[in-house]
Amino acid sequence: MKIALIGATGFVGSALRDELLHRGHAVTALVTRPERLAAQPGLTALKTDVLDSAALAAQLAGHDAVISAFSGHAQADVYGYYVRGIRAIIDATRAAGLRRLLVVGGAGSLEVAPGLQLVDTPAFPAEWKGTAEGARTALTLLQAQTALDWTMLSPAAHLVPGPRTGQFRLGGDQLLVDAKGESQVSVADYAAAMVDELEQGRHLRQRFSVAY
Image (cartoon, rainbow, N blue to C red; front, side):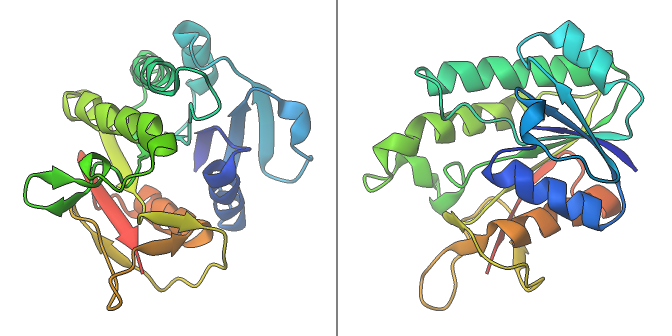
């Protein structure tokens, strides 16, 4: 497939890029600094301003699907920037005539108890709250879409560097923990789960989660 990958040089985006190329997909990396990407077979890098929805739509046209690893964590107003970006991505995907949009979500909006999301617990790190609340708003925006076959994948509480094992569990809206009560997954296995979803389409118009 021909995939447009937004944020292809970030922590998660880089893992997604590697996984997509490994499986033989053609990847258009939509990034702010394309010069940071080394040339390799199957990869095209384009300079992108995510907030320019019309220009983004022109870049998305002709692809089979969009994967957004867009993040606002480096901005002063993390939440505001992220929400503006995800709105622009949704609008651009629709304007480009695409139906399939996959979005990197956060663990913050996963439930740790009935009616209680991780981001709302006292121990949730303050430095990640803006990103988590942005991803939660993104999920609400996606759930209102009727013209898109969207999917959001939320990781475990700890998304860490590590190998691709292919051994992970999938869940729904609840935070997954292991036998020790820990919630973790490597970014490489997260990417594997996301590209599985791209290829298999088992969670259309749903959010799901992945962890060990």
